[in-house]
Image (tube, rainbow, N blue to C red; front, top):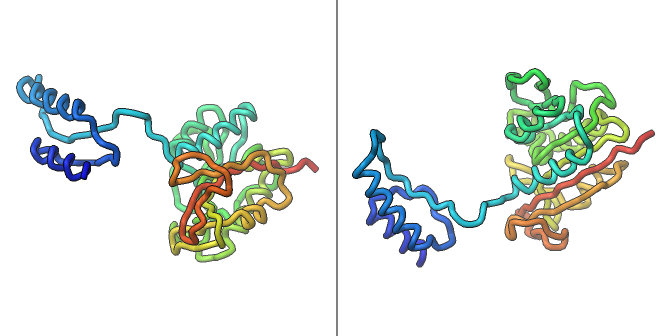
Length: 252
């Protein structure tokens, strides 16, 4: 009902609706918009005026991407700087932030040009890293593991590509180094949403991490928009929540 009412209000104003929040938009906000728009149209001060109603007041939004990078940043901050970091497939904007203080090597199956001197870009498949053993202080990978080998990014179809890639991450990590990664998880049997992603269960993630020492694990619920216990993540076979893990490679 609220959604229909708000749409009618926007139609009366002749405003094109870009995004409608589920929560009710306060009447005062709408009235202010109408009054300020009229003032702009009467005195544009040389601007062209176009209507595009937006309501982004209230609590600052936080979603699963924020939660994953907060997890990653919290562990990197504990390790000190500068670090020699290898990243596989994480969000570009976060990587640009890392480049302020760290030496960064990035892996991508798709070609990309380097723009900063302290970044090294290697174009290769994650299951066959062109990197020496025991090379990096930290290996990071945010929501990438589940995509490997499904062909979505032009990589070769290989159902074991994620296992091979994880072994490669461990291989290139220095003894005493940290592997920080996130992926998708549910409390059900493993699934493939082809060709988007695999959805792991906890047993599979533990298998990936065999031989490593767990520093911290966290689980993020899409439904509740917050970290939760493993017992509270989704249990539907095609449902997905987020796993965040920081693991240590034992010193020899």
